[in-house]
Length: 126
Image 1 (cartoon, rainbow, N blue to C red):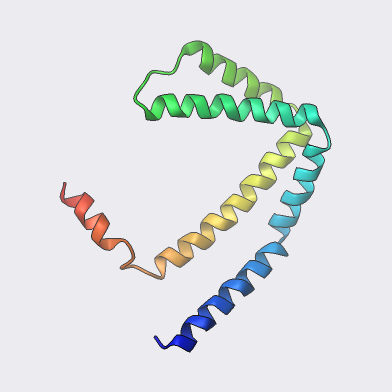
Image 2 (image 1 turned 90 degrees about the vertical axis):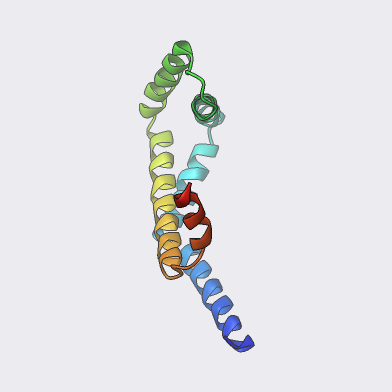
């Protein structure tokens, strides 16, 4: 690949970034985020839920059995936020945007089958 070719790749990346910033997924996310942030109670409820969720995930990843009381608190926190249409709309918009970005990442990775192959081969040998 010649030096000018890499500039074309960067140009296309910037073009993709512009298209993403204009996408309905990103626009919906921005609107839902603004609505969420207009109410401090909603922000606090979501932050509390995510804090509990992260703590539970960290316990599992470190090989510990999650405390049943923590699991119960997370379930209750989820039940409460799922009744809140503003938080639910935000989470749904966030999920749609995340799905779009994950799909794009997969397209890029699939186009480069040798990327990381040596690392994967090493892991597979073990």
